[in-house]
Image (cartoon, rainbow, N blue to C red; front, side, top):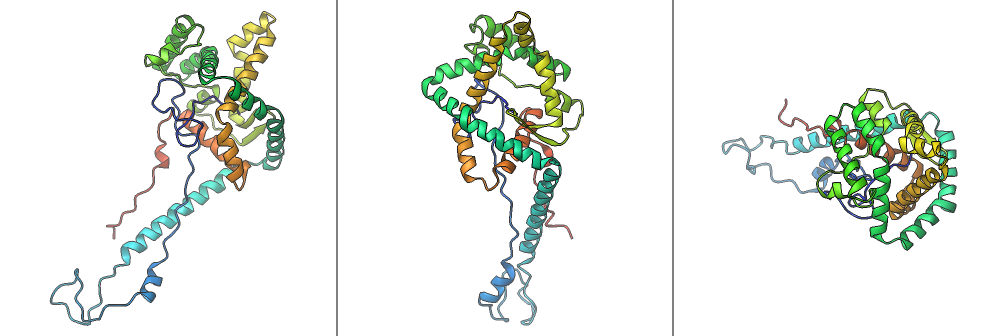
Length: 318
């Protein structure tokens, strides 16, 4: 499902980490390298010349008998190999668990490639024109307005999550940018340390302990989960700005807002997605994995997941 985000360092269009303009999101497209077990110990013993048996090794006592076995120098390497093998198996198990959470994969893949067709014919060309015609400062201004219009939803989700400090920041941002910032065109609040944070009802449900459910690909909207789809429906119905425009018979403004949002977001990741599509063995699986990483990052508000810390083997344990 489409989500806003400022460009992310090294894998997105332009690096803006630690700047006040934009989302406080971590790297969106970090790729995980699967460590491979080391298996060179035995081969090295077979190919490298062995020292004479009478030679005294640095670690051996000076009065050791000539025929005493040399200390096992491969012990540490073997433990490292076993640790890396365990990490690799854990990564494979995690991938299998992820695949198991996609019970509708056949249908999801069909919808995914339908969405890719829509993107190829409509959204990507529009994003290319948008990025070519609109200067950077104009794109930034449009993005600021879109973020500002979402402020009531952000505030509501902050309150529902019990994040009182975040709710205060969201309120101050909306008041400052709606007045001094000319309706949000200029992110004055962000320039004074009140950084924008994306919040959704999916994140609120996650804070409440609702499981994400199985993976879904929605027509046009893209990657989602059962929980995310429910959250999107609640927000689409309860968005105060959309409700106001509907009640005043200005539905065209809502459609325009949605269209500009989609084109602007697609333009931000134009080069990144093109590169991923060229280099991915399974583009569908790659997008599924990256969607989950990004959603988990949003839910943790950019904080590192302790479960992702690598385990440190106890080399001194007996």
